[in-house]
Length: 592
Image (cartoon, rainbow, N blue to C red; front, side):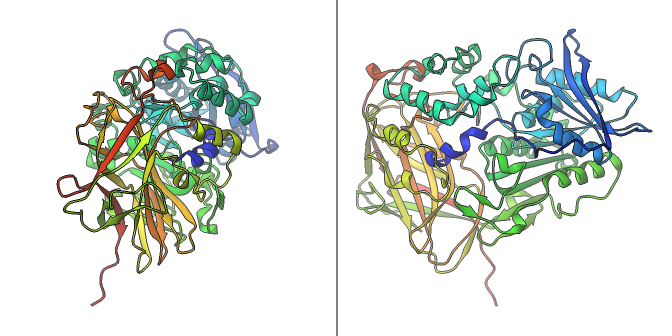
C-alpha cells in the first residue's frame, strides 16, 4: 500500500476497534475478574457477560485479547442481549492476567485451555465460538490450529499474519512496530501515547533524518523493547513466524465452519487472505465448503465498523452492512442450528465500488473471468506521470530499458511527509505518483472504451537489474479517471533479496537482469469508469514509516549513512524480458 494511504491507516494496524460507547442495559449480568487456569498454573483474567437471570446453559463466545477486556464491553453486552454468554479474556501478562506477555507466543496453547475450560462451566452448553479482529483474529487462528474439541466456529476479522503483514511486509519493517509494541507494553494500555500521532511522526522522522540504525528506534521512541529486538532477529519469514499459523497438516484437519472478514484497504488483508488461501489449498473439500469470505470496501477499522466514507472515497448505503448482526446470524446458524445468514448468498461476498453493489461467487478464483496482461513499454524514459511509459497488450520486440536512481541519503521524501502531517484523503491523493524524486517509473494504459470491473488481486512481474546487492521496491496501481483524479486500487512492497522467497534471502548479482514477482498485491473490486486509465508505479521505498534500506546487502536493521550506496535500477521490457502487470477483470459475454 502506498505511503499516503499508510499514513492514515497505520494507527489501526494490529490494534483494536473501540466498540460504540453505550450504557450497559439492565438485561444482562456481568462478572468481573473471572480466573481461568492454564496448564502451567498461570491464571488469565476474564470478564463474563450473560443474559440476566440465565436459566439454562448457552453457547459461549470468547475473545483472547491483549488490549484488556474492558475495551470490548459493548460487544460483550451485545452478544449477551442476543442469547449468548460472552467471555473477554486478557492475554497472558496483560491487564489482570498472570504471566509475561510476549506477542504471538502463548495464544495457541492458552486459547486451547480457555476453550476447554469455558466448555465445562455451568452456564455453558459446551459449544464455544470465537470472535475478534486484527490481533484477536490471529488469536483465533492460533487457537484453532491446536484443535480444542469444543471450539465449533471462528470468525477471524482483519486477521494479522505475523511475518507476512506485520511487523514487516515483503521483508520491510514498519516504524509502526514500535508504536504498537508501546501500546501493549506493561500491564495496562498506553492508550494516550499510542494515539499521539504527532509524537510518533516526530520520532520516526528523527530516526530517518539522523540516518540512525532502525534497530535503535525503540530507544528513540522511549521504549527499549526486547520484543522489537526479537522481531529484528527474524527479518525473514522463517520458522519463528511460520510456527504461529496452522501448518498444511493442521489446515487439513480443520473441519469447522469459518467466516473470514477483510476489506479492500485493510492493512491486514494479506494476512486474512493468507489464512483463507492456505485453508482453501490444504483443507478438505467438505471443510472448504464451510469457509465463507466477506470482502468489503473497508480499511482495517471498517471491517468492524463500516463507514460510507473512507480516505476521500464515498460509497453507497449498501456498503454499510450490520457487522454485529452478521456475527449473531452466523453464531445462530452454527451454534444454535438456525438458518444460514441471508447475507451469505454464496461462499464469497465482495463489494464492487463504483458499481456500489455486493456480488457473490462460489470460489474466490471465480470472481474474475479474465486475467489480462498489460506489458510495460516506453521510449526509454518513464520517469514521471507526464513522461510515462505505456501499458499495452503486447511486449515491445526491442526497447531500451527505463531506469531510476535511488540515493538513500536523499531526505526530501521524509521531510515532505513531516511537513504534510496527517493525510485524510489517502485513497485519492496522488502525491506518491507525482513526487518520485527521480526514484521511480510510471506507466499508463490507454483509456477504457467502456466501463469494466476489476475484481481480484493484481500481480506484476518485472525484469530488473541493479548495481547494488539490495534495495527496496514498492508498486501500486491506480485508476486515473477522465477528469484527472485518481483512486488507489492495490499495492505491494518487496525487498530485493526476497525476490525468490521471503524465507530464503539471496543477494542480488549486480548487473544481472532478474525477474521480480510482486504477487502479494491486495484484493480490490472496482468498476472502472469509461475513459479511465490504469496507472502503474514502481518506486523506491524512502519514508519515515519504514525501515530504510541503504542498499549495502547487510543487516538492514543495523545500517546507517556509512553503509549507503546509491542504486541504479533498470526496468527491462522487451521480447526477452516482458515486464507485465496482470489485472483480474470481469468481462461480460458478447451479445449474440
